[in-house]
Image 1 (cartoon, one colour):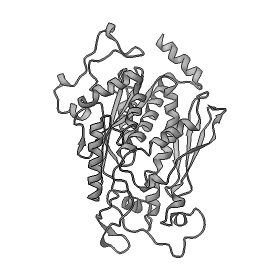
Image 2 (cartoon, helix red, strand yellow; image 1 turned 45 degrees about the vertical axis):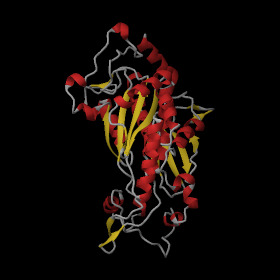
Image 3 (cartoon, rainbow, N blue to C red; image 1 turned 45 degrees about the horizontal axis):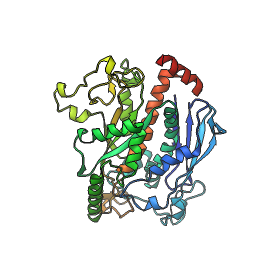
Image 4 (tube, rainbow, N blue to C red; image 1 turned 180 degrees about the horizontal axis):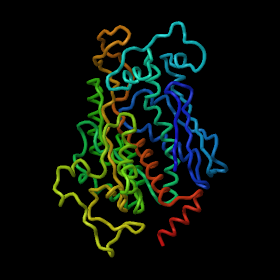
Length: 402
């Protein structure tokens, strides 16, 4: 089983990550990870920080001659922006020494953030430690760590991709409106073709017309000094039948995927396949008819379905169809326009201060979701096929295919 830990604060010197449980002899380089770190900055509507960060991963252990060793892999990503930030964060987040004599405590929590709940939980009299660790900056290291799992999947023909389906008021209402285009891309090159096509759009949408409308919507929201959330879809192709299990609640693949999506900052809901709309439809319009054996079009022994409303998972188990999971992101709570709050030092009502912020981060969130989904699928794959090295796992896969 692959597991990882991240450490570091948004304005500290660096982010640190450790990944263990990766089989030996997996081809891996810094470039494999940096590709997806760069994609994390994609998207129209990003704030000023995206212009001063340039994330590159440094690998310190667990790799020899571009192959994994089976031992823990450690990473570092330097925080470039903190050196250029004019807010004095390096000094107020210093690791050693006493606090500066002129230290100004942050005591005005922002609604919608972890500020107040975190301050109360850890008994801080200054919100800065909460701000710095709860920040979505942490997702840079999360993408780095989970990109290792992604490489494992790629070695066995499993691809992960994503695209945005809605930002605020602009977007699609039902999967039927984009499914044909996604299926065409999957036939062309699997889920990787989906993410590459989405990356060409300023909003990571597969429609040029929808992209233009979203850009206009983001600009109008910026003028209104507000923010936007949205919806994205993660697609996984090449998944064999039988990942996950129905025999215990904590082994269900769909449950693990929803948890992975909702573990990302600002994600408040997730659905497998057409989960939300399926609740409004009769069963005859929901369940995916199974095609006879001679019409099989799914790899690794799967039976094709005429539709895929289940999102490739039935009873907590992958059925061989592409896995689809959608994430729902709330609007970013750091707003240009002040919101009502309370100064915890004086207990007086006070509006929040202006802070540099994105208008929307839905395109970026979709790339982070790819990473978290990849880890869940990789662990389910290892649970089924197991092994200490890539050659051993490949023998197990080939035996199962036979």
